[in-house]
Length: 379
Image 1 (cartoon, one colour):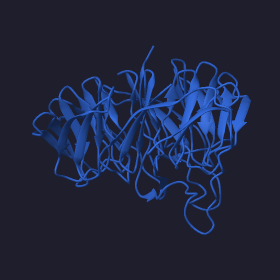
Image 2 (image 1 turned 120 degrees about the horizontal axis):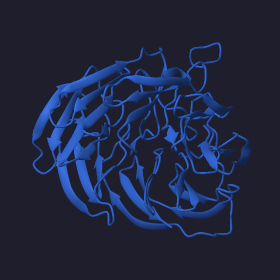
Image 3 (image 1 turned 135 degrees about the vertical axis):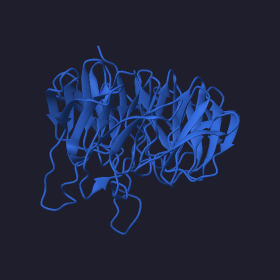
Image 4 (image 1 turned 120 degrees about the vertical axis):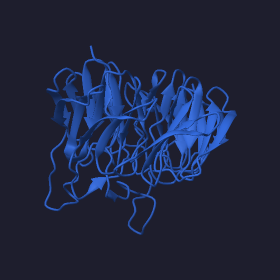
């Protein structure tokens, strides 16, 4: 059985965000938070200041007990995941276009000048550099001994991590308008294949070592009279559970496919750029308006819908223990029951402007805000 390295689709030119409900005279007002009876305590283990990144994708990257966080100005911090203690700082002395990846004593980063750098983490010495066809649109991905990147022109390229030698490249032509991705895509579950969301409502699977496309499937087809209405991109992280691949398209729908050949299992008309997650019984999706849906994982039947967080800039839901965790744009972390979606716990963080998918590692979730705060949560 193949295992999957997951990535999202990002491309330029970009719509400057998919939706904003906090600015403008005609903006929707965030739904006020309702009172509830707490059933589960959500603890804040630590909160620390990290480099700021107001634009682009700069999620924390986990490697062997360390969280690496980068800012747009080239500042990089290594934090101990258990305590949040700063273990190391690096100044790459160049502006970055996306977050970093790290492994084997190396930090990998893409600059605004369109270069890919491999930097020795202890000394800050540049080991190798490669000129790219465009700037990185998302953080690098690690697979086996490869480094896989996607640039703003839609090109996916694999490099040898040790030498920087280019191994293969794939390119898909881009439409005139695409969506800026709003959730991080860092999640490595194996080294065999690369699963990507793409423009035009598609997902594709590639063999990592050769770069050969294994299959491509349509999550949603473009609809509408105008070019803007026809933007239908898979910009959030697809998910894989060993037998199926599920994804959601902006202005499109949610769909699950058989992992082996890409045959459609089911689809529902709920689109999003926020993202989705799954467990053994359900697929959970945050819609563009902040409503959270749960669909039966086998049939796609609607199980429940949670409307309490509409227009609150809500992240994709993730499983933390036996509960669902979402963050909103005002810094509240919410725990929901996966059985019916009701609120079971809540905590206020000093994390603002986050739309990044929380990074769950064991019994902890790590949340990064565009205000330069990284927080660790646990039940």
